[in-house]
Image (tube, rainbow, N blue to C red; front, side, top):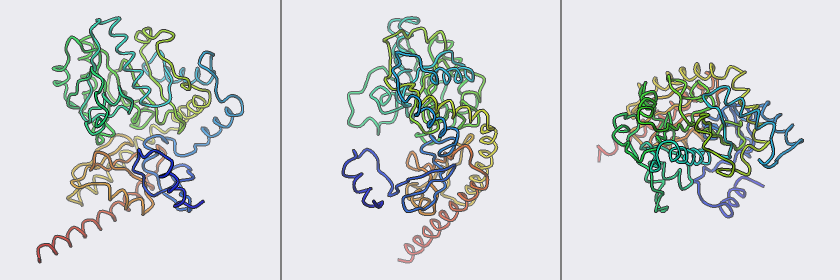
Length: 410
């Protein structure tokens, strides 16, 4: 069946919740993917920060194959070997003492919100239930995480939203302090806002939040669904500052492309969860956690964190060069291999032009080009993408100049 036929069938049978590009991908390896017609693309989006190891990493593929031959699913009423192994690894390499497994970032954030409220009622005060989140945040599509997401465009049509959330500006410690009241139980935020436009806070912001939360006796929850698992050059983004959260969520890249989510919990707080309080039928299933063990081991053992930091610095420097050449580039920013280029114009058309050239990038917040390549991307591949981006910008600038001349001559 050809691409056009398949895309028509997709429009006919699949709920229209995505504005899809006219591209049907069928194969991936490393930093590259191929469409049904055999065209190759360099992937600087990685399935939205999912394929941190690249596509079809051999260790992940083997782990999936081996586990699928032994046991695909069993209930969480029984002990599951790869689940235990992955939880042990996550705790060993983080602040956490316990892990709850689920299937997505939204599920992980939902669990964090439930646990924060339950712990607060037990340990802080019966009336403690409100959560402070940040403007331009994104935490998921369930009703609670949608409400936690402080962007009105995602709320449209879903009211009344859940009560118990306050929004404050990102990167503003004073605003957080002023928002805390006798009902506050937690602060929830992304260490770097992804969907909000690759917004990176000032140095000391996370540490300052930790100090405020300690002072007020409330919990600090970090949503590292997009930036965790090595994306910033450290396994977790909070490691860039001298602080530790109480709860942390990960998902996307945790299992190298297999759906999974996890809530990492400080030991004392985990005690508030009792059997029957929270559950997930497929959470921590043998297949996903076996893939997770392989993916996390690869990140830790194959030098990906050092590589990410080094290539990320190079990538940012190349974006800075472009900024100097084109006046419609407002700003560039990034940490590790999550990078953004803020434009003074809309970015959607640039994404399409880059796709035509064989490069997959993304635009978020309307005018921020977002780059999320696999952690194994090379400087040479960065150069290839930069060259294509420069060519695209040059044509855009020439077209804009010609239009201006034409307008002035009329």
